[in-house]
Image (cartoon, rainbow, N blue to C red; front, top):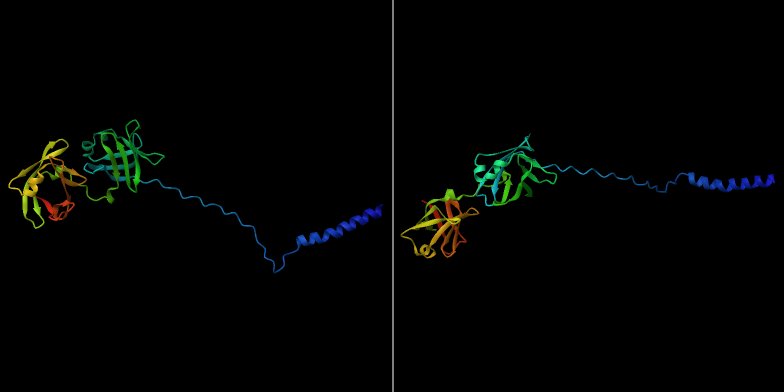
Length: 249
């Protein structure tokens, strides 16, 4: 019995030894050992820095016929952070008198706040450096980086006065007055004879500024549009075979 157990144990050791040796044997020179890949840790995403609003920006309506300067401060006010407007702003936009501070909301809306911390306007960034917000009775209002803007378009107040319509050659063919007399939402035009037939047939009755351009309009709704050109001249667009210019006297 004892001899049987001893013999069985010897046989087990004999068969197990090659398996252990094979497991512990070093790799042969020709064998390529591939190490398991080391898990790559994802790099932390860069924090998105909130746009710095501190500084002066242009505040305007959509046509930029009403513009003024808004200045965002970095120090705290009664609500949010301090905000300042130039003295002409409340004249153009009376609701500005109620603005007491500003704040960037978590959804990246630029909020202009009243004295209780409520939103008077919430601007969203529609382009780099350009924010817009709707306002009842005002349409769309804009806050834009002043350094990236060209000069503001001329206003009606800047354009009133005495003008001549001239040919491209420089010959004056009519004199007219862009008056301040309101006719609905436009202003009255007064023609001073003698005047060339091309103008009298058109018969401008009113004028207005639209997107920085002078628009003359006849009583039947036809219009001539002039854009600012060189040397303070205004060129009729689209240009015709006989170009016309408006020149201030």
